[in-house]
Amino acid sequence: MILSNISVPLLGLVDTAVIGHLSHAHYLAGIALGSGSIALLFWLASFLRMSTTGEIAQAYGEKNQARSYQSLLASMAIALLFAMSLIGLSPFLLEVIERLANPSSDVMEQASLYFSIRIYSAPAAMMNLVLLGFMLGLQYGKGPFYIVLFTNLVNIVLDLLFVIGFEWGVAGAAWASVIADYSALVLAVWLTSSLLKKKGWVFLWLRPSRQHLIHLLTLNKDIFIRSLVLQLCFSFMTFYGARLGDNTLAANAVLLNFLMLVSFAMDGIAYAVEAKVGQAKGEKDAEKLKAWVAVSTLWGSVFAVLYCLVFAVFGPAIIGMLTSIPSVVETALVYLPWLVVLPLIAMSCFLFDGVFVGLTRAREMRNSMILSASLGFFLPVYLLLDHGNHALWFAMTCFMALRGITLIYRYRKLDVQNALLK
Image (cartoon, rainbow, N blue to C red; front, top):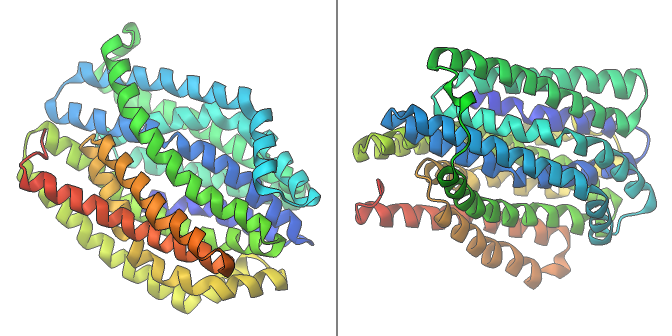
């Protein structure tokens, strides 16, 4: 899972690097706004993977195949409904993006072009989330690795072909991602079919029960709110950065790739913890559950320190690889120190998100996110708004720290109350 998640940022890195070497900053700023908006919408759907992983992992621990099949069917139905809603609302969403970001006309033109193409990958992206969650819940870590690696390779090759070879610009980057998402869905269905051949195709003759749909909708509601608040913070970085100018927006797009690299590496550990904690809860084994939390914290700390060192030593070189526009490079270097310290500060929030997914305690995740966003992100931004982009990065640092603190506090409280398995 660490290997597969480390490869995920390659999508953003290649998109940024390919577009970042075009002639004007508005191309990079446009794809930052367009892809950031798509990321906001698609990451809102992360509840599909999270809830599926937690449910399937607990069913796996209970050795309850019927629960696994019902949860898979219910999640697939919700995924398709969510995806079609996004496509139907896309014209309205573009208007909202333009009003919130208020970008230059050149930037908005490129952002609209990217968004209008990429939104059609929503059905594939949503279904992939469910199938990834299903494989993780069954402890099949190789499946997600194959899917993510395959997706990234397809996207990278098509990025280079469409953007550089065919000179399609931002549209080429969008089409590359759409084709990669649907290619990944084909592979995900094939891998799932291989798993189901071993476990039976009986689920095809079932309908998602009302009980499972209601349970998943309740669970998904809290994770959706949690994801919405999280993406509000990240989208605020993009939209307010757009108001600070094209160079600041483009520089933040470059630097957010650093944070995404950290998040996906930490999520590689967290995804494994989701499956293992969920399985331990299904087996009613509290000691095994706490052992997996301890191991994940150890490895998370090791990776966080490594990231800090890499960003401190090679950060300027990485920025130079992502863009050759002098004004963007100069702006990004000013804010690079924030990214050097963020891995250690953010480590706990990523790992304990995984713990609470495995426990299927979405309400705690929701409450932690709302509190952290209110006091850790938006309050510092409001108080320090005169400091411009530094205020945004300071707020992001406080936000990550408070998320980790609140989740650790709640986990320890559950442990003291002997409520981890309830």
